[in-house]
Amino acid sequence: MELIKITDQKLKIMLTPSDITLYELNDNEPLTQNHPNAIRRLLCEVRRQLGLDFDDSHISIRYFPSKGGGGEMFVCGAPSKNSEERRRASSARNASLPQASEKAVFSGFRWEGAYRFEALSHLLSACARLQEVDYVGESAVYRDHCSYFLLLRTYARAPFAIPDELTFLSEYGSVENVTHLRLYIKEHGTLIRSPDAVSVLAQLK
Image (cartoon, rainbow, N blue to C red; front, side):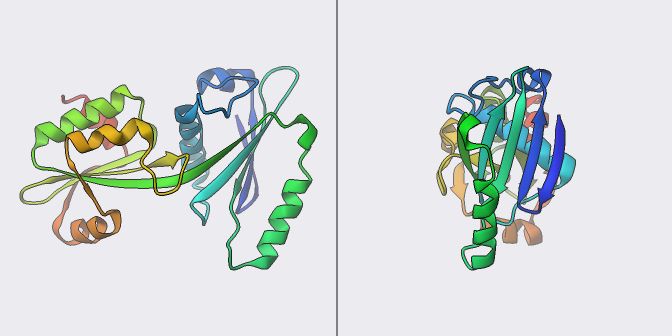
């Protein structure tokens, strides 16, 4: 896989046939709704390698397959609504893409969630379930004097909506406001593990 940073809001990803296999994508229609976890895994790897973080929560992805397998993927961040100049620039860039060969479009929204657990066993069970559903994204665990807190960061298909595969978390803990919880743990919390808390704590179940 080759990552080419075009601008702060646009990235080109060159995928080989082995990349398609590695990320469990379909080489003809890799961005369909059958592959949400695969897309999240790919985006998390992009963030890890480049440290690239778009300034808006909405991104769009366009994919153009090659005849020999693999293909080219363009990841674009949504322009600021307050910047007419960036809107025109983004439109011009999208217009230059070879639309005739485009196979699929995926739109993703950065999603963050926070949960409180009253017992360590509940937290470990939740992490084990997340591991079972192949959770892809960042995760951090904190604790205060009486509770444990799990913060998640991944991608969802709809804004402000919990990814379908994560709705079970409310069975183990209570949903918290992410912003408020970050302020609380900054003063009263102790970090246990980040950014791979889910994979690590799932092994303790």
